[in-house]
Image (cartoon, rainbow, N blue to C red; front, top):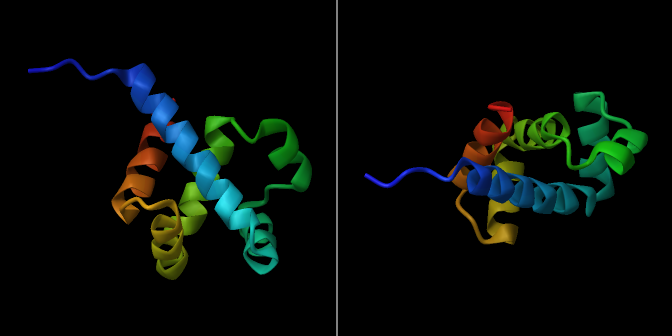
Length: 93
């Protein structure tokens, strides 16, 4: 059995979540909904964008609205399950 590289898993999750954040912010209506529903502020995104708690909130936001989750996954050329797994990895911190 191969050992899991948790550092690589974390790096991959952060990378995917940052891409999902960029996709989310690419649409002003979706970006405003993200801020409204998560309680994040533009300052949070500027100063703490790589923090696991912020990235986890972004992925949870996408998970809570399946059309966004699927559209984001399609745009990033990943399966929706990859976004869900990234959120789970970030929450392990």
